[in-house]
Amino acid sequence: MSVLPKNERKIAKETPRNFVIFGGTMHGKTYFADEFPNPLNLNTDGNAEMIETPSININNQRDSKGKITRSASDLLSEIILELETTNHTFETIVIDVIDDIVTMFEQEITEEHGVKSVGDISWGKGHQMLEMMVRVFVMRLKELSMKKQINILYLSRLTIIEENDVETYVPSLKLKWLNIVNGNSDYTILCRKVGKNYIRKVESKRKNYTRDKVDDERIASLLDTVIGAYDKSKKTSTDEAKKIVQQQEEAAKAQQEAARRARQQEAQQEQINAEEAPAEPKEDKPKTEPKQEPPKTEGPQPKVAGRPARISPQV
Image (cartoon, rainbow, N blue to C red):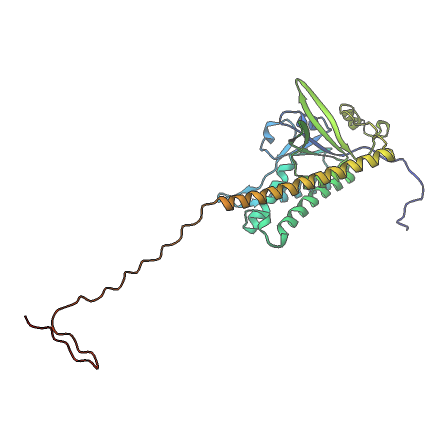
């Protein structure tokens, strides 16, 4: 039996299942996640009992001495396995929040190896282990999404970057981990509260989704509430692309030049500081007292070889 598919085009299923949702505290990201069908919330802030959604507290469980007895990675692995192999009614898994999951993985590695940071493990093995744990976790969720048609939502907090009086909103998840999560997601959506209004806006997406090809009406309706969910990406002409590349190259050169000047100024300042620093006091050598001549005494003088002794005259 051939493993190759028929050489004919088919209707693609375009229902997005994997999302990164980020925003500030109380800006509506958890509320948005709760609107997805039949969610299970994997909660990292210990508030699982305070929300109505079925939820599980995710943490590194410890004994009375503070030693990890059941790691967050083991608990998550068991949850995913049960979701894969049992009959259940959950249709959405919410990771709330992914930032904390990575931190728990790092804690597990550092405590297992008795170090303060993964960077303290020789030959970069600590960083390799942490990256592998994050990748395996994300890939297992991606496989779960594909096999069971389950929605996966990665929630992250908000970081605001200010540059030239312009604010840019990005997930608080470190770029290295964000790239792994984004690489396995369909949409990245920003949730913001402006006044009394809650706004949902697409920051990036895997492709140009069209509503009529999303075969799950519940997901299509949720995306109706997100600005830019079905907007088509603007086609860039060759001339525009050249201008963009040129601007990026010029910006990169400017950054390199600024970095070079900063290093030069730092070196100059270090030299100035060294020149202005007070000289160390010289150690005073102990003064040697001059040799004292023995006092002259009256009376007979000792004989000197080859000369007769002189006798003082008697008065």
